[in-house]
Image (cartoon, rainbow, N blue to C red):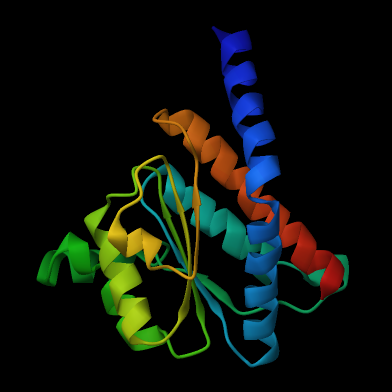
Length: 184
């Protein structure tokens, strides 16, 4: 079973290396342009995707050890007081959209991560970011709906396995980060 897992993930990565490389470069360029214009990254996800959002944000904020200045990025799933207040007082569906309403502005980037591609709170975040005229980069599994398709860029991992999708999402996010790291 373990060998099959490695082979499945490597097969997906090989396929995406052929089809998604230009989009990864475009994503890095969108983020770089946003930073240069004074924008920031707002990232969100649920469960393992929340961890991926936090990891991605940490790459930008914790750059001082590499002798580079921190860059503005926020993981919207990290502030437990805000997350629980919005969830309790309104709905879990509004947990990210509510934060985007308060924190997002035109020129910022939303990085929305959903393994299923169907998470109502992620879809609501994309809709709110669109209203704010933010750029949207979505990472999903094999399910791509109209909301995701209306993102500026989206990466669809051709798998229904949560583990494979999350593994590949992290590779995509690391590729974007590495391009930004070398060009900023």
